[in-house]
Amino acid sequence: MRLDIQGRRTGLTALTFAALLTTAGFAQAAAPCGGVQLEDGKVQTKQPLPAKAPLLGNDLNCATAVAAALKARPRLRSVTVAARVPSDRRGDGAKIAAEWAKVIAASGVPQARISTIVPTGPAGSTPTVEIAYREPQPRPVALIQAMTGAVVAGADPKALENTSKGSKLTQGDHVQTAAGAVARLALADGSFVALLPNTLIKLGRVELTRDLKRAVRIDLIKGKVEAIAEPRGKGSSFDVVTRTAVAGVRGTRFRVGVGGGGKAEATAVETVTGAVELSGTSGSKEKVMVVAGTASKVDEKGVPSKPRKLLPATSVEGPLFGAIRRDAVLRWKAVDGAKGYQVEFGGDGEIATGRVAFDISKNELAIPATLAGGHWFWRVAPVDADGFVGMPSKTFSFVLPGKD
Image (cartoon, rainbow, N blue to C red; front, side):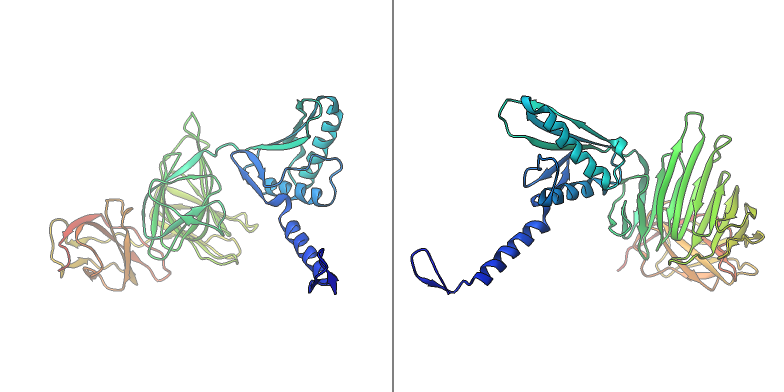
């Protein structure tokens, strides 16, 4: 039992008091520097950065936390450590700055990106440390031109955020569409990529040089994309890369699809116009040219199949244009070898806005009750027994009355 300063008994035992001190010390240790934030090119902390050399104990913990925060910045280009000291202690300032630079380099930041300066203050002033960093603003490489449904984007695939039409995307960004959602991207080189439902991509290099040579790479992680890439100068490249294949475009309109999951899976390519050079990424050196109206598939071992013909486009019987009733039926001629058909609706001739699609087995479709009233464009393509989507029909349109 202890006595307080006025001689009264208190229930606070030495053991309890020690425990409180330990808890308080742990809370302080759990947040080095009182917390670290990187904002507007400066390291900001609740407690002053330690201006000491060497850095030991809690001071070292603080420096290590700052270094880890800097290392975590994906676009970090440079770090400047400023150790401000009194004019008569410039030598001490150099040691303090060098100590901080050593800790930051130990975290993985390249030494070549770290610089130190030793500004001086009045004699007798307190030494301080300030740290600044530089992150060049990334150049946009794509724009979300149109979207329907839930679409998320961001640099970290585990922390993607909701996005919207008109959003700019940079190299390294991921874009993902949910079930029933689509997004159309306009790339900086003048090409376009549509992400179909349940698709995840990563934007790689997207460039167009002064002599009109393009260099584009898109990583297709899961799902299916449709791309339009007009021919460019000799030496241009436009590659869609999956775990098992590389589809190199030679000026074309094409589709690439791949399954999700962590294992290598087959990649399917369907070429509508132009040509695609298809090769595996698993050691196979085989390449095939998938020309307009053909398709190929790269298996799990990275071996591409011999290109085969896509089913031909069907002829639409109606409706071709104008106002229709809500109980109208879309009809087209059956295609030999078709196991089904894919019918697409959209708010524009490219079927890029408001896209909805239906997979059916017959060569007719009653107007879906889910379609809202308004102007709709539509097209249909046959699907073969292996799931390849064939050549699309011409695009037609109709005006649908609103629901009662």
